[in-house]
Image 1 (cartoon, rainbow, N blue to C red):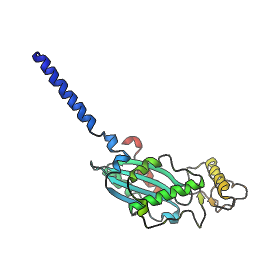
Image 2 (image 1 turned 90 degrees about the vertical axis):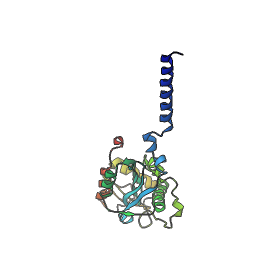
Image 3 (image 1 turned 120 degrees about the horizontal axis):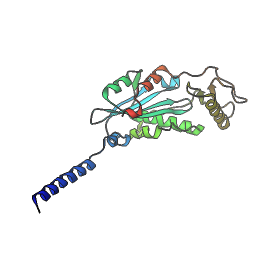
Image 4 (image 1 turned 45 degrees about the vertical axis):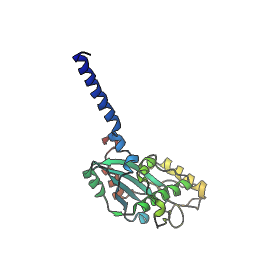
Length: 231
């Protein structure tokens, strides 16, 4: 073998070794996926104050990643009727995590109770005919092995024993009618309360005539999150 051939073989071996090392290392996108992040310690478990008094609020679970970033699963939860109305998973640098936390008044909640609260709201809404937000499963993957059954609290959904549908600011009249019709079919005309700026289905009496405004803190927290493409 000539000297040039030996050099070429040595260079080729180094290239193959480098390729093998790259394959064995987890890609950044994989390391930041909910499934991988779920193996990290819980950094924060938060809920907006007075969630059950208001009926809707933000629930957030965060885990700290090895590089200092924070993996965040956040849920806009309607505990009166629709369950998880919005869900998102993001990986935030520390400064954006702090900005998110400061957008509203959070209080701590044990991680097992956070999971039970969210999953209970999802189950309640599903029984009424409403699926969770499309991104719920991805965000919920951050729960990992948190045991909801370990929570000593048993949450009650609805308001005064019945679902209470409040039309949100982003819900069109057509969507509000579909929700009202679903509730009417499932529960009957007097089986739920509602607050919406639409004509009620026949036989249903409105609880009030004004549409809901998403609580300012919840909207601010949602606005503080970067777009998915920024990470």
